[in-house]
Length: 296
Image (cartoon, rainbow, N blue to C red; front, side, top):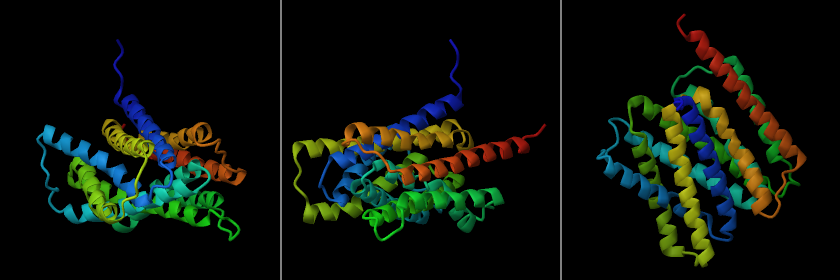
């Protein structure tokens, strides 16, 4: 029986993550008129429980790695803003795939923030890819006053920016030796604590179906988080990151079949093509750079 390589395992995990996050987007929409803060609470509650049980089962510490506490707070703050932006865009935009592609701007902003705060050099080709991807995002956002979805589009874009900042902190803490499972735990706990007061003072009554949908939001989010964490333990980002963009395809398909036949407009498809093309270009470029650095 053939042994499955770590790279293949990583690809499988990242595809599973993309599928989970697309399911999360669908259930966010299906939950209907529930306030965004309430949706965000349930999104993180399930991940918190799973992360807590995992840490206890593995007898791992509930303390942050030395020097990482402030980065956990920054990561959690940026990540929570990113989730709010993404959820608002997913709920208010006619196409969930539009919201998904705007969130996929996060890797480009991770490059920018890593250059600013971690002093990692951005090479000319990377800068060009970021600039062109930004143009692609404008095709999705369509920044004109006649666009009734302008505000949710901007929120989705800002969500991608915040996610990029959060991933930069995760990268920095990973370099310091922080436990990835604790990072998920801290973020989930932080998010639940911030959104819990809203539920206490302004809880929106839900139907049985809405309860089920929001629990599924949490299950899908937890599955996505843990799958993508596992993916990057099996293989480095340069080898598998491009497969994360399958999320946009999964989201578009589920939007069409389960959310009333959603079909993005032509300009959105142009934006998808530009952003994904830049992601593919960066994927190929990063792999070539790595191969050139390998000793003969």
